Amino acid sequence: MSNPVLIIGAGVAGMTAAVELADSGIKTILVERQETVGGNALDLYKAFPTDDCFYCFEGNRWRPGIRKCFYRSALTDQPNISLRMNSEIGDISGAPDQFSVKLKVGPGYVNPKKCTMCGLCLEKSEAFRLLSPQCQPQAVVYDPTKADDGAKQAEEECPTKAINLGAQPTEETVQVSDIVIATGYHEMQPVNVDEYNYGKHPNIITQLELAKIIDPIGESGGVPVRPSDGKPAKRVMMVQCVGSRDENYYPYCSKICCIFALKHANILTQERDDVKVSVVYMDIRTYDRYERYYRESRNTGVEFVRGRVSLIEPRKDDTLDITVYDSLLDKYLKFSVDLFVLSSALEPSEGTDKLIETLGIKSTSGFVGMVDPASENEVVVGDHIYACGAALGPAEVPESVTQARAVVSKILQSRK
Ligand SMILES: Cc1cc2nc3c(=O)[nH]c(=O)nc-3n(C[C@H](O)[C@H](O)[C@H](O)COP(=O)(O)OP(=O)(O)OC[C@H]3O[C@@H](n4cnc5c(N)ncnc54)[C@H](O)[C@@H]3O)c2cc1C
Ligand code: SF4
Ligand code: SF4
Image 1 (spheres, rainbow, N blue to C red):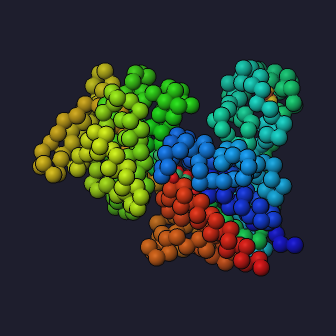
Image 2: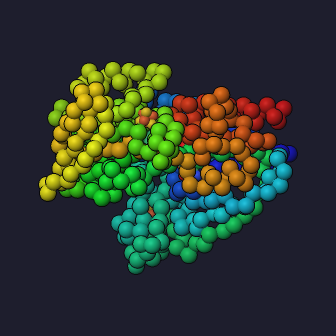
Image 3: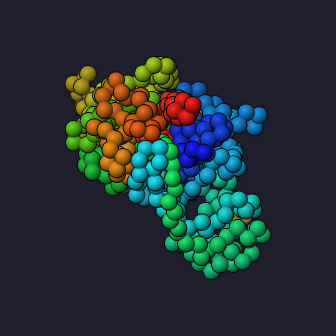
């Protein structure tokens, strides 16, 4: 019998690969470093290209007959998937088709198969948290740095005995036939991009931070608010290409940030009559079907300024005065805004460089792919080694799902 397939990363791409391989009868080990699956798509509210709610994203038909909702997938119950949460990849050795991989599995403080999400521990101690109502596995998580007497009490009183505060990390070595890299992306924290003052003023945020603010299940119930004081944000400015297309940071275009900026601009202006949005850009790059978002935002009154932000001056009331050089008008324009949102570069997830080096994969950008435009969508990146989704470079969800399915089809072919 063949060894199982190892999938690194349980975002949309890794989950698609795992579920479809498992449904085809192939055993998979799905390793995720976080305590919930879903990756970056967990906090995105509405999703382009269909504007569906991300919780029931149509592109992912995980379980026909159950709902098209990947957060209710049977990931934890599918017998062919062995899910390792809170885990990291260690040394990789051996030959293709017979890789030997060390897994560092974090302590399992809460057993997801036993937790019924009754909420008792959440009342007893702040060390327990529900990451998201849609999280998978459907279980609370425990943060040992916040341990207190309430946590101990919760462990004793948990009705299903799901809590083990003494849990320890473990290590194990698995033999696998193939490795699928689905490690996704990380939104660059633009702390070093001095001109934008990120990290120095609470109302200067990134697009992923904005996505959390406007998510109806978030703290403000979806109302766009200023982090500084919780007051409604009426004037929002976005700035594109922060850290992308910039030789000082990342020379590549992050490909999808124009689209998610326009998505956010449209959500803000269409859901709230009193919010005004301006977008400062070099070029608006809306490929393929996404031109619709650009048209829509122009029709709903989003203001586009081609130019550069030259000065940000915080006022005492936490409003930000922004000076922008408009290169079409050859003029300096002044704005006063509540939120300044940076469309920050998408960079490879932490540790991807080590995987690339260990597995001897080519990369010129830090991502697994993007070696040249012709190979951008090539999912076979080595002998019995594959990559899909944003691990190959910035990608939207439908693209990530398609690439994951391509990986599945390649593995199935190789086993014929
Ligand atoms: C602000 C914003 C809005 C967006 N809106 C949309 C939208 O509306 N529609 C759309 O289609 N796309 C959207 N996207 C893009 C979407 O987030 C990606 O297409 C999608 O998340 C890619 O999925 P993925 O599985 O490839 O990667 P990720 O979502 O990044 O998942 C990767 C997973 O791998 C895990 N991981 C990483 N490294 C390791 C490791 N070494 N070991 C173990 N686990 C690891 C991570 O913890 C994560 O869970 C948006 C992106 C942003 C930034
Ligand atoms: S008390 Fe136990 S079953 Fe209830 S939410 Fe906490 S861990 Fe889950
Ligand atoms: S997608 Fe748009 S904002 Fe992002 S790097 Fe490319 S041009 Fe800049």
